[in-house]
View 1 (cartoon, one colour):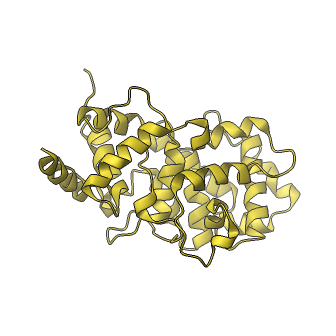
View 2 (cartoon, rainbow, N blue to C red):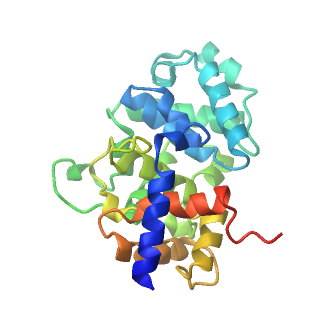
Length: 264
């Protein structure tokens, strides 16, 4: 049974982990850029805004890019106060101008100190040159505390950045980490970070993945929270211990493209 399920999921990974997947998914946003910092910034922003219709998510991200003159990293590092006025009307669902301006402030202070956003996920900067294992759970808990370390951060913005310590599934952040960390020859994920290993990622758990995973008996836990995402990932590690999160392609594709488990 397990071998049959692995073969089925491997086939679905091959079906959906393809360049053709990019155009209609939020991952298309960071793929608009070649500079590492632009990829990181817009990858993070696209993941943060990834709720609702994918067409709308992509449209709003492109609107945001245009407001930053098509060059997010350059705008963030070099903008002056008057340049921020045009961002005051940006909104996507509950994400508004207050959140937008804080994100810009955070990115500016971070990139003034570090070359890559990867450092924001490192629980200790002493890990830079060491071969220590960075688990996604530790990285995400550290990131949230670091992200809100600026003085007078807006409390309302905290709802847009989750962490395992809140028992959240951290779907958007896990998706962002997948984009940055996973590397293969298929061109969807970027693989531009190397201090977190693909083996230590947690599968992004959204409504579609949750529904399909339960249909396939990959999840037993009744509620859907961080431990549920961990449980799913542990099951996926049985199929591929070095790259369990590749099965996100299969589970998401089955859910959103093939409508598995949807009650009509």
